[in-house]
Amino acid sequence: MHIVLDLQACQSPASRRRGIGRYSLALAKAMAAHPRGHDITVLLNEAMGESIEYLRGQFDGLLPQSRIRTWEALVPATCIDPSNGFRMRASEVLRTQALRQLKPDVVHVASLFEGWVEDVIATVPGNEAHLGAVTLYDLIPLAHEETYL
Image (cartoon, rainbow, N blue to C red; front, side):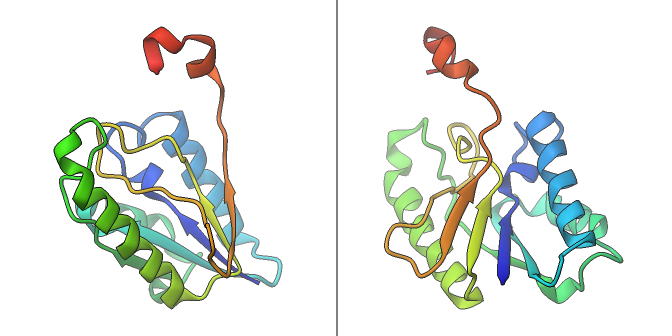
């Protein structure tokens, strides 16, 4: 099985140093270290390029560099600014095309709730040939809607 790990949550300035980024990176490294016969590919967003070399280094000895792939979102694409709508939708298409080229069986999105104030483009499959999986960290935003939503 070919598993693609979308690690934009490890690139996002808001999440990469917090629990979501640390957990996502640890999970991805554990999967790469123990693939159990699966092919693992890491997918990164070039729009957050300052994090790419760091993340490539995190997989030294775990994955060949050819298994760390990138695509580039059109930025700015944050949700908070309505004028970014076209770039956000175009970036979703670009990400989908990058995933199609990888031909995954499963795509794991490290955090679906990114992109409000950062250039993260996270979508789950609609009519794609692959399955999608997402890690849900907590539901605090639902308990405190006035603060988070």
